[in-house]
Length: 99
Length: 350
Image (tube, rainbow over all chains, first blue to last red; front, side, top):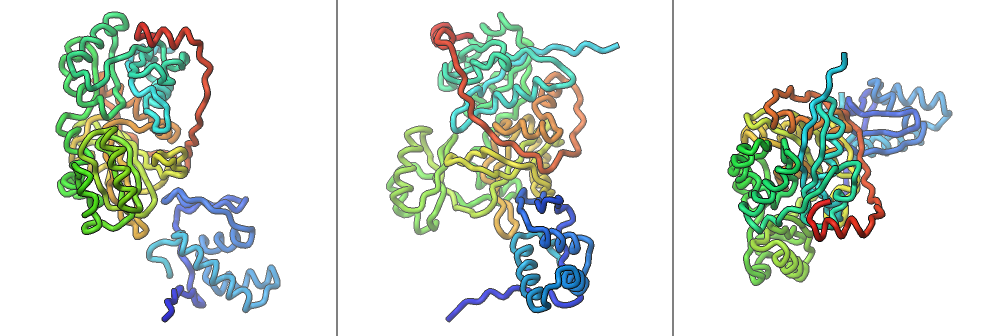
């Protein structure tokens, strides 16, 4: 018998509400003032976090990233899903997240 | 015209800085940064190797005082002797183990013109580690399940009530995480020999260690409070680095506790935030913590507020602090002349 962790998918039209007080810097340093935890992300990660903070939904972020970086849709879907789950895992999202 | 700041002579204990450092030097550092008064600092030490004794830019003069076990009268006699020479305005004790004596001396000290700003005996007694379960019930705060043990034979049966790992705590200081019965036995012997009985067995709660340094006015109002998340923790469980956090729930727990207990003076709440966001109270330390200078760095000078309240001034509560300020502790080797060590060791003052 296997135990499978089912991560919540962010489907089209949905966004991930990040904590309002999340602090970002241009270097990719992300600080969660509620827990005191700090992380670093690469420029694309930072870009996506900024889009999420602006309230952009998955479709809009997808369009922007695919256009700018010429990435394949399948690759975007997979990496975006991983990234969103990482943000959730790190508790950087608001409790009543998806809008 | 610039007003001249009043100068206060303040005696401070807790000048030690071993792996479990005392808060004295941090308190002094905060007092020296007061905008409203100047200070002459008198150190009160128990041991000739407390580093604060030799920090002459922080402590003007140090006197040895008798160990808390010597009793109230012996301590009072020594304070009277020091007061004759130094004209103390205030004493800020910083050790849990000495607080009982100082609280009991509040009135006689006041008669000499020496102020303090300490919790009451009831506030001090009820928050003892050994009373924490009742404390949690009384003030509606979650505390990890605990049990007091008086003999080592009780350890064998602990597995019926607790699962390993569990925390073995000394009556006054020190705590160890025991992963097996053998470890629990060993820690019991160590702690009972050092701090006496009972030894406290506590459920291990996994989570982030978060602390609050705060000060209460004795009427239920919180004058200041800064929450901190431990970032670097020593094997003694002490924060060697920490960061101020924006945790409203934690602040609210601290404010409610100060309100309900009418806490008077400095206090540190040690808590664990579990993975599901629940807060468990581990300890209530009845004085400022060694990391209290972080509060100053965040814009709240708690030791300064304590002095003002002790001197009878009204103090406006702090309403904000900077989030994301860190402290990173450093151990510094001072070079000390043997003559100085000789003087404090033989004459009891330096």
